[in-house]
Amino acid sequence: LYSPWQVTGAAALGGPPTGVWLIANNFNRLGQTQKAKLLRGAAVVITAAMLVLVQYGPRLQGFTLLNALLLIGVRWGAEVSYGTTYKSYVANGGRRAAHWRWLRAGAVGMVIILGVLVAYVLTKGVAKRPVETPVAFVSHRTLFTKTHLPLMRGIVSTIRDSRPQLNR
Image (cartoon, rainbow, N blue to C red):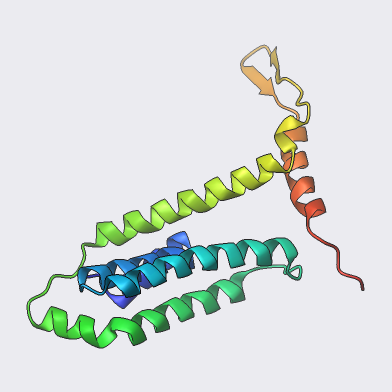
């Protein structure tokens, strides 16, 4: 089983849905498959809610406080939902999940989040904008590649422009 701290670590790396997914894995291993299914559905709903918040929610300068609150929520949820079961399981000789497993889960969650971000940016039409071809030029010592940054500027402006403006 994953400990509540392992679940929190995975959530810190891969987002709260990753931590909820690991809690669901624990319930599945304990034979509580209905709870596991509900939690996996909750992980999908949390992901969708986070995307909606980022897109349509108030503009925040940083999500540090929100992320900290979400991590506290995942930790609390893990402790409340199976904390005593976990402690008795380990006390009776049950094995705790290896650290590399929760690290791997966090890394997979991070890759999924980056994939969703790239898909979002691509659906907003950034990839359809013309991009200047990098121009290579040679100095007397080294070959440099001069790249113009319209693609990166386009990505940033698309994300900025796609968010609804608040009336102030």
